[in-house]
Structures are given as C-alpha cells and as structure tokens.
Amino acid sequence: MGIEALNTTDGWIDERNAIYKRRRDKVLKALKSIGLHVDPPKASLYIWARIPEGYTSASLTEKLLEEGNIVVTPGSGYGQYGEGYIRLSLTIADDLLEKGLEQMAGLSI
Image 1 (cartoon, rainbow, N blue to C red):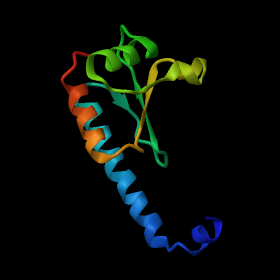
Image 2 (image 1 turned 30 degrees about the horizontal axis):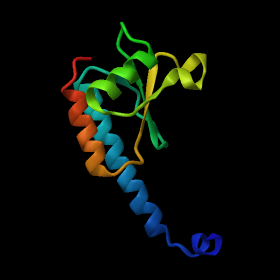
Image 3 (image 1 turned 180 degrees about the vertical axis):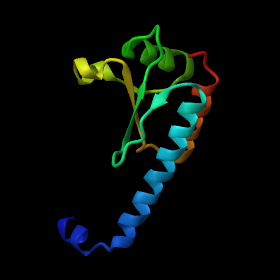
Image 4 (image 1 turned 90 degrees about the vertical axis):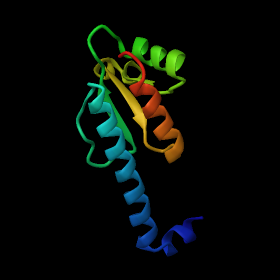
C-alpha cells in the first residue's frame, strides 16, 4: 500500500481535492440557507457549524437524528470549546450528503 501511494500520480490527489471542495461548497450553501453560521474550512474533511440559540450541540444532534435521520457529531464531544457547534463530515457519498441536506432543510431548526 505504501509503494502504491508513492507511485500514485498527483491526478488522483487533484480528483479527491475537487470532490471534497464540491461537497464543502454544497454543504456551506445548504447550511447558510437554513440560517446556520459556518466559517468555510481551508483544508478539512469536516464542517463545523454554529448551532442556533436554544440548543446545545447534543440537543441539536439528537433532533437531527430523531427527526431527520441525519448523523452529525455534537461539538461537546471535542471538549468545552466544541460546545455551540456541530461537526458534519464530507466523507460520505454524494447522494447521501444531498439527501441529508434536503432533510435538514425540511426541519424546523
């Protein structure tokens, strides 16, 4: 596996970067459209979104799971400075990401 990684062309890396950039841009647009504040990450496979007032990161995570079948990670799981945020992954398939964003838009957050 290590040798293959050394022999892999930069084209593969460029393709992966393009996929994650496309997913990132899609998530940022969707989250902003439902009123969540998000600072665009410069290089990450995750999006950190500020949660709306009236929620904890755990309570919003629970609502998304129970009402929308959407799995995100509560920021509180990353310590005291993570509270107030949820973390979304860009590593899932495009169709599942799109479905989750559509379901999230349909919820009252």
